[in-house]
Length: 150
Image (cartoon, rainbow, N blue to C red; front, top):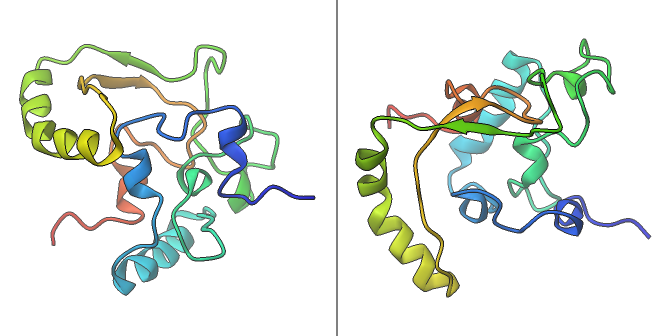
């Protein structure tokens, strides 16, 4: 029996391992976003897997393999190079933390009420990324799906 791709990560990881993780695990609301994913996947030379229902899932952004397990010349193997995978993602303090935290306060309150949780948000800058198809710290990964000009 095979575990569905959208459930595979939950064997070891939390369903909400980082801010916005749950909100991203849906089918894109607009057809234009699916078209953007296909276009940017081709442009960037990466694979952005979606569930059978065309939902964004963990492996849409994250890759389960260390760099080099899949030939980096192939779309499935292109990813951010991890310098020290044992440390995983590393964050550093950021002087704009209070501004970012205030900006997310209303969304976080709504999220906590909706999911009956008490998640806290503290903005920190990404210093080292882990197992991503494209860099997130400069916004490249986000731009595969999102157009922030809209």
